[in-house]
Image 1: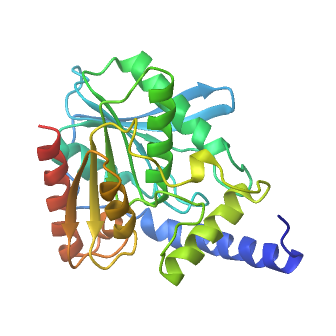
Image 2: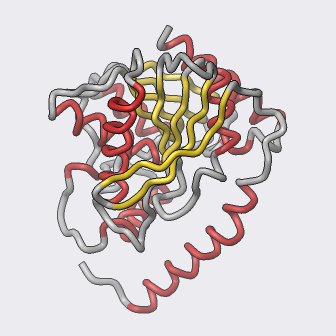
Length: 277
């Protein structure tokens, strides 16, 4: 599939605006995030290069349960810095240790780069930390990567113990009955990440319930991604669904600047903890 030079230029300009304006705003300190026993940066060596990562620990010695977290950002933006406060809240509120991954971004690194990074990060986590339970998770487009990585591991005979997803975008391939804005958002992300591919792609298609581990999903009532959660539940997936009726997309990030979003995030994270207790 080919796109005009003008369309590509417009996309690149938008991506640079997001990276230069929105990402620094998202990376501001979250003064409401809890104190943790340990926060340290790591480097994960993969076939695709070195992946920066950050470990958030509730106990300095005991690894316990581990959540490998893949940030949102449409697969084109965000980083460890933009989701530092999110991961601190997740670790402190859920009781899980959290390993955040700085996967490669599109369009510079197209499919399957981010998917391969997610899979490699889970393999590293399993081998390095040997946690009691290993989960994958993420917010928004990070949820797409987490689900695909879980399905890859299940196919390889190494199933995860769970998924922890916050307002996930579960497909980039077209989905029937999408509202127009959501349909256009999926198409835009696919164009950035997989413009070189035509036709359906298993990693980008809406996931089947078969092979998915126990799954927690938190959705906002004012966010169209809640429709993906409903579709997954309707398909028979083992989902615990927490709905925040007044929440918008990205309420985990907004917790740093909004008391309402902070309360929404706290409730969602408490529901995650309860789902895996």
